[in-house]
Length: 339
Image (cartoon, rainbow, N blue to C red; front, side, top):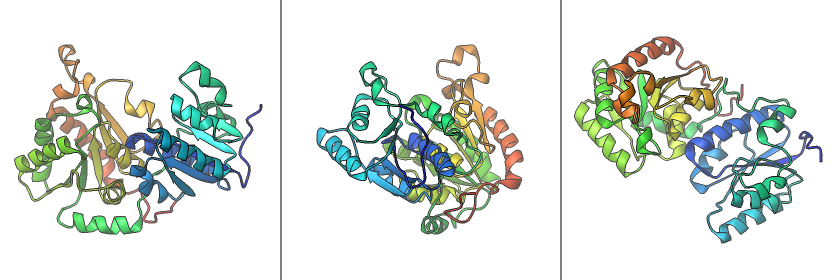
């Protein structure tokens, strides 16, 4: 069967259940699709934790909330998809449950890939190949992809009223300890910035990161530090990051949020190949610092743990000098700005 390309009036379903950073990256992919096919009705299927943020994106026409963790939820998701009469299904997961969702979806054209051999026939084309056939660059990150609602931007200003500008969004957490820069180095990096008049927003979630935020806030002891770790849902986080000048963080969802929202962002990573090379190949306002480029060979088992604060500060000074003069260039004031 020839896969073909979408036509005006077609209905398409984009599937990504988790995690936060991956949701954001696939929303950016979906925006590239919608720019190419603006007259296709695009629905995004995701976990309920993310649907409030997904549904305010101006290129998403509808949202389905779902999960595949239990048979009852899996069956409900399949039934919901079948009633939607989608011609196109784009599944960004490769596991067995997601492949079965695709199989029973009744979608005429199914895009994706399966990691298990006996599911490979379910899909008509891989997403990368299909995007090339449809003549759109799915990995394009040269424009803003994540938007905040006006009410969330306005609410964020109340949080930030106590902070001076410029404001730094510090994404101090990560999905695993291996990806995280230690608390002591964060303190050593952020303390001189606070003393120089930077407003610093600490962001993260979960008990471990909340404890980390408290330690940083206590050690710096400055009115220029605002600890919001654990205090924001994803929509409010998007509204807040909109008003930050620059961002620094690990390979974590909030760091993806900052970069894809148009905030000049510096990412801290362990090893190459790095985040920019794999996930944000064309983003003009993103820079990275790879730890194993700056430490001794003996310390490379845990590169970020051994990355000195002075190295990060030196990289940040270069980064800030490049982006501070035009920090808000990539962000519009209109939620639905698709230009």
